[in-house]
Image (cartoon, rainbow, N blue to C red; front, side, top):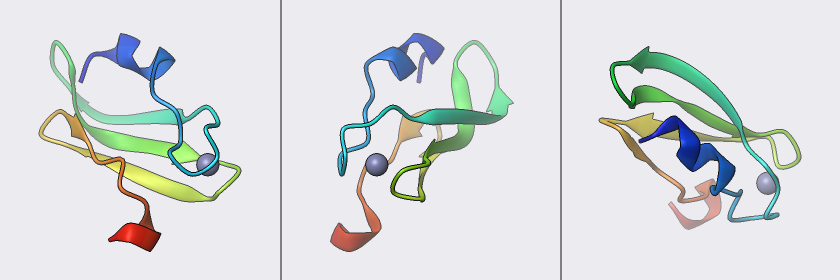
Length: 58
Ligand SMILES: [Zn+2]
């Protein structure tokens, strides 16, 4: 995913802002985590695709 996407992405639970932790980055972010501090949920980014499914719905 593009790093600029972070400005658009919101936590699907609380619609809050997400914190980005990058693990692997080429041109775009390949691996990492989007974290919502309010919900204490981590949304993993795998192969450049953020998984925005909450644990409730998994
Ligand atoms: Zn949240």
